[in-house]
Amino acid sequence: MVEKSVVVELVTGLQARPAAEFVQKANSFSSEVFIEKGERRVNAKSIMGLMSLAITSGETINLIVDGTDDQIALTELIAFVSK
Image 1: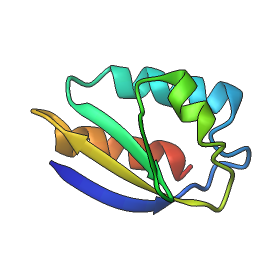
Image 2 (image 1 turned 90 degrees about the vertical axis):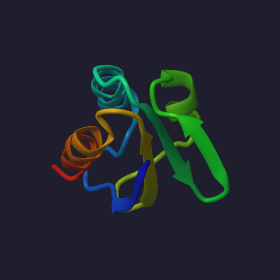
Image 3 (image 1 turned 180 degrees about the horizontal axis):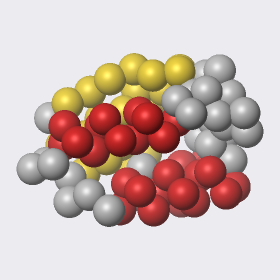
């Protein structure tokens, strides 16, 4: 299991289209992927869960990835929210 705090740098945050693209990328990995914002943790492979966090640009989130490809998944998901 790997975990990292990251600041969301996407101009629109993880709203609508970027959220759907993030979920699609998360689903390309076999590892479990979770996002924490404040006290809430959701499955990052669920569009409804991700949208419920209402993540905006500049907010800090915690990515938690657990599985066989956790390191590469974490690296790629961080790169996604940092562009």
